[in-house]
Image 1: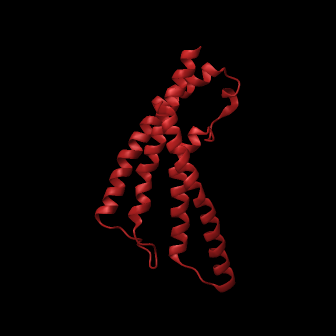
Image 2: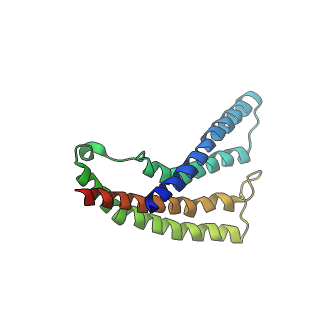
Image 3: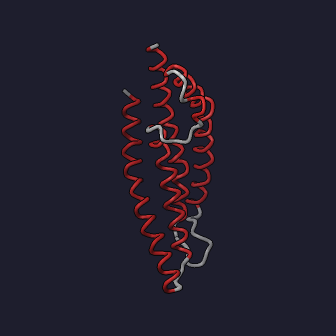
Length: 163
């Protein structure tokens, strides 16, 4: 019951955030055209590109995990039984993913909080204001990834209990 709910949350956020990739491509094309055709460049456009990429990567990580589209070394894993895969997923999520997410949330929250406290802006001339917004995606992304990790734990346990 909770696992499908978490999956739906991450699916919705992942699908929504995936549109940032289209916006990112348009901005990069515009930036390249302006730079090479008219010798116009700005710090804000560079920063916007990496802000969009960071938000896309961080906020869709949980969705990628839920869709099993994350990076995995499949040399041995692909030949394992469903029960063996479930056990590896369970152990990996409990001992690697969730601790990483815990640290990412704690440290990311402090990082974002400090940025909000000083209303951080870009140090570059002509850079973007409100740098605290992108820094807030760090704990949010780790939170979504951790939520999806909980969903994956539930699924792995269900698989193991079926055997």
